[in-house]
Image (cartoon, rainbow, N blue to C red; front, side, top):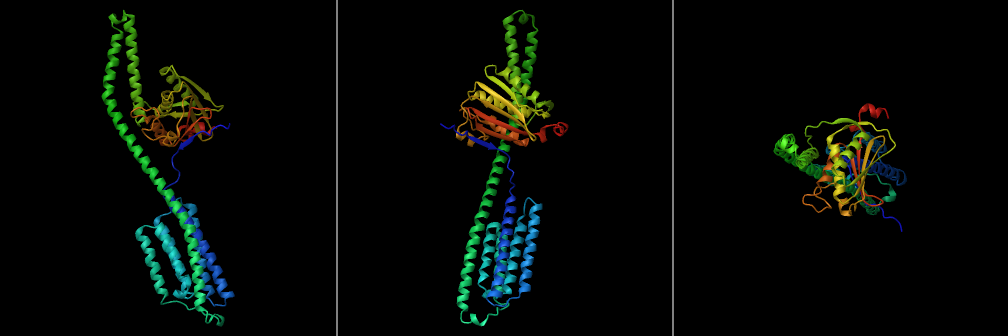
Length: 441
């Protein structure tokens, strides 16, 4: 029996800017223009030399050359830019309309069956441009087609075509129809795909903005909780400290143990409150420290073991030299959240694997619990998606994803090959590591 392929999903910040659709569409226009240039050259050669219809070759080839130069300029622009503006797409289509008009003017004007090629530019404008500029292409194309009915250079047909003008026009119209149909299907499908990708990207941005707004609200709530709970917790700590030194309590070992337990509970409450604040984006009086990655990971594991002695936690380190990093408290809390989630999901044994490569610090948490369902992997990192069935659950992974995202990192969730959940954090060295340590690798 073959092993099942582990279910897997990945959250990562999108690398595809919304305006990259404009760049992709400009590249499609460049391809279309090369096709048009090749088609014009072939048509001019066939009509002039094989059909014997005299054409102004120099003028028509000049227009072809200008189109080629325009294409080379567009390619240079694409190499320098990661996005193309709406106005630049409009100007590119406008150039195509005007160059087609020039060629039609020198080859029969409105009597040329290829007059219908204007429809390609109109269709592209309707797909690529805003309403006002799409109507602008319609207006210019209609105006140019109208002008060509009045002003054009007539074609000089040879004697062999006299009496066959209608047949010749029908054949030319059929060829033009076939060209338009092929070009529209070929390019419209690709343009539609680019636009769908852009819409999907914008939808992800809107979702991300909503999630970040959710985090801001949680931060405000956590700040209010800190003000409300911090003072009574501090008062409890002072009172318990005073009790510990009272003769009546020092003489009773049972009372001493109870006071110690209450002090531990107060410290635990303070730690939980600090964790909530850090996850929501606020550090409660703690500044980032400079520490070795291995030492940082071992400290997190040691503190977690003290809090959860009933769950085994093992740290495994790869054979690397680990740099010193700026250990922001939110990273500590993110890793602690992963360990807490693994325990709450039913794991009795957790492994934390730490490694690195030239660009990333990799920290993975693998447990022996039930793992993720396919639905959980699909909704991984979204708020209130939890397999534990608790009211308001699912915020732990949501906060982890957003903390790592703000640091420029990646989160990878899957089910391990031998069962259990596996979550990997990839933290960028460029953001966290000291410059001297990175340069020294």
